[in-house]
Image (cartoon, rainbow, N blue to C red; front, top):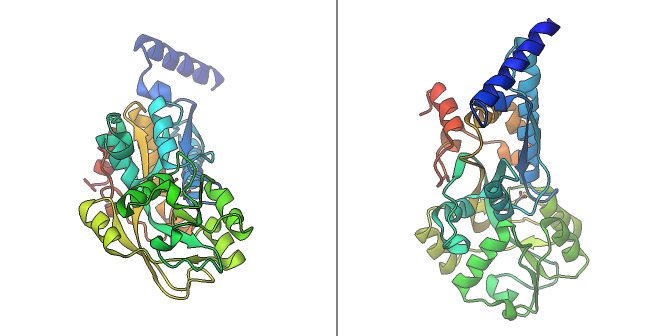
Length: 332
Ligand code: GLU
């Protein structure tokens, strides 16, 4: 047995050397992949780690059945959507989670990505909806975007999806940074604590519902999520396919005493055309073969439907490894 394993390995290595950069099956041997997520109290971190869990489960089951993929996976916390897109482009991350608006802009070279399109960006599937939240501290009296004027507002860390979406909203409302008393750049993990400590009055956050970060502020110190449903948001939704109106249902958090209407995006799972087909195929397969378990890992995943996940909110082309799996399943 031992001899067979060694000679198989030698053959695989020889094939890899012969075909230059390595055949795809050779590359799948002991491949380490990294998935970029978001802050540790957000939903991306759960998505990334749930995907790694499925990949490792598929590996363990495969070992028993002689179907090995050799992929080991890690999903570290990162700065968020645009950070992930940038690191995938550099080849530092293999996969990442990104808001559908930033996937669109990165692929098409628009907005923040003007003159800097990432044409090798590839979509794998979409995940959960992410409403854009404005969360306001108790006693601040803020009930609308206009009330943020003269207040201490967290616009988010550079690299986060909410930072970009907040800037889009600021432009749509004609709000400048100097209109706030201070515009802070705290991360998603820091912002709820800062709100509860009275260091900021409000923050903007694009995130799945419910999540631990928001509940620290709502359930922890009576912060509230306000409506964003004026003509400004309506225009954004009407003009951009990647935005839609969203509802954060009454009862989601302790202070959600009525449905909140806002606009939002979808979280999407992305990669680069440079990531080998078999790696993307195996990761995609691991997720969809275990979708029932995936759904149970977070309330935001409860309604995941494969038919929608492979087409909704995706603007970059699907990666060929994902297409291979979707065709096998007869979904395409
Ligand atoms: N939408 C956020 C971002 O793009 C991350 C949300 C989360 O961590 O769940 O940065």
